[in-house]
Image (cartoon, rainbow, N blue to C red; front, top):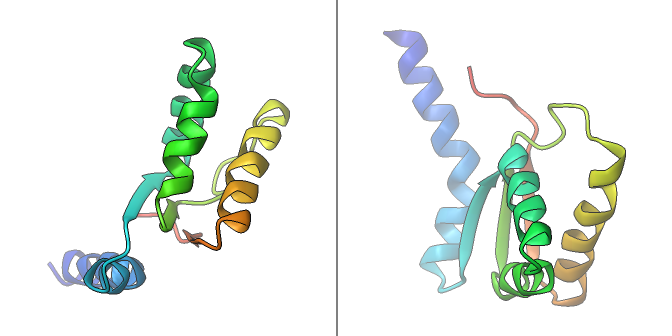
Length: 102
């Protein structure tokens, strides 16, 4: 029981920047890091990659959950840099959570 409460507290602390940004009126999305690549590959397969990047660029706060907790494939480096570059030029923010969930 105490471990479960501790995990819930850690989950809340991980999301504090997103909660505060949402309260301040910014658009926020939290995406699990492996899921980001699945969505990127799916959008490339359907020819919607630029539209997906545009969708991510409209979000002001992007949170990567479990960022770089798994090895990254060489062919995933380019899309990750595209996402980060889109956020940088838009003056948006991105956070990452390097601590894995239990």
